[in-house]
Length: 120
Image (tube, rainbow, N blue to C red; front, side, top):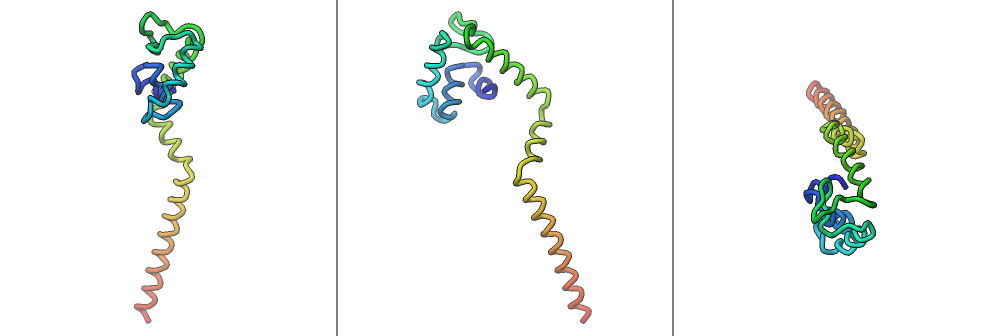
């Protein structure tokens, strides 16, 4: 959610709509976003971290802003380390390493067999 809030410059309605329907179809998610904002007694123009139209994002939305801020700060602090960690633990990474090792072994065996054939 913090990434969506950054992408939509704090616009809670757009971020909630993108969360529900995907970033490519905000119109489909506006019903969900409007319901959440209405239950929190926030206007559709609510903006995270500052507020719009007099909204301070109190009520139900006051704590998500603090949580989002925490995770945004942690994400910035970790930076590329989190991306490297995620890449290392993808199953496809291990498959590529195994296939690369197999390719090297087959190459060495082929060169060895070629050497034997040339000597004969």
